[in-house]
Image (cartoon, rainbow, N blue to C red):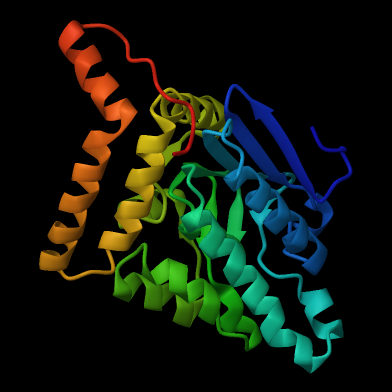
Length: 262
């Protein structure tokens, strides 16, 4: 477990790794130091064969308020693009790491915070959570958050959020596909933990293969996607866990999974 004053808190239990953004006084805004710490943890966890599921949470009154505006104003202009490239790398890492990543959204997620939610594989939101890309209101269009947002929700809704800066509530986020589940606030941890346990009990290599294939096939034409996923399924069928899972199903017993990532 990391020190309580760390910018990113990490706790692992029974294969589930919980990462908590820990700048509550700054609404967990993504400072350079926080992004560096978060990237390092994600890279480490991606290589951890015992880590089966990742939870991403935030401490305090917000999930994440996006970039640290005060810090941004103090940067030299030459640092602007590297700043956003660092944030983009985090979003791509969330998609590319083998473990399923679940966002636990208890409150407001704005700008790059909304982007974080959109970049996770699953997102469970408390009913009081809100989501917005309000950069337009301060003259800074949410162009990088737009990438993940527009890959989660219909184009007209994405444009409405981006052009107006107006928030949507948790039920709207569920309706349009930004989150995968909405529960009452007091049931958020129960729901998130139950989902994490469900995934942690499955074959890690199978989930890793399936996650990678999901995002890859979405970039292909329908015909190419079927060709690609046919090859993936053939590869999957050769794996230990597929052979074990099928035999266990036929034997009416619980499977014994290979806990590695290969």
